[in-house]
Image (cartoon, rainbow, N blue to C red):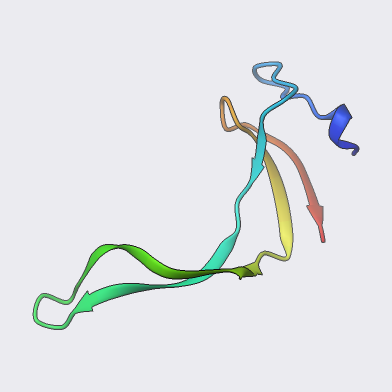
Length: 69
């Protein structure tokens, strides 16, 4: 499916889409409470992990397309 052909079946959006990915990063862990603290840091956006990309509508979150990379 070409980018200019994407259209959300739910809301009709034709411009705003996204894919979810995982990246390598760190998050602090408190051994006394066994909880994580704060947000992620030291994120390496060059190590993207996602074998399958699902394209979602950026306005309503509806799944628009799914394909393997």
